[in-house]
Length: 129
Image (cartoon, rainbow, N blue to C red; front, side, top):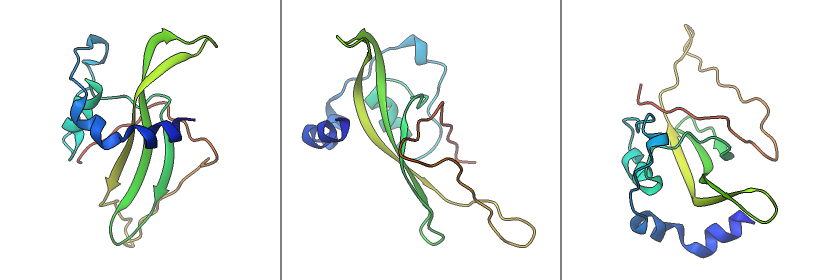
């Protein structure tokens, strides 16, 4: 189970010891101008698309900003004995989101649909705007 492996590997140490790799397939995805983006790109060797990543937590907090926690990983071209792609470079990524736009009444309308036991993403985009 990936949660156990993340806990036992000491993810904090992984952030400082993984080399930046040249992966031309991912060159078109530039890190957004947000805090921590350069570190995440250095960890993976590119800015991830978050394809097949899983949303673990969404916390809506009107005082300290909202948080979206995502389990991201790199899908390699290798296949295991069961026929599944081999995944490596697992990371728990936390996005802190502030400044949702308000409507003309000053009310922020935020909605979440389909949040359930497994929340797999097609992609995730981030920007400072």
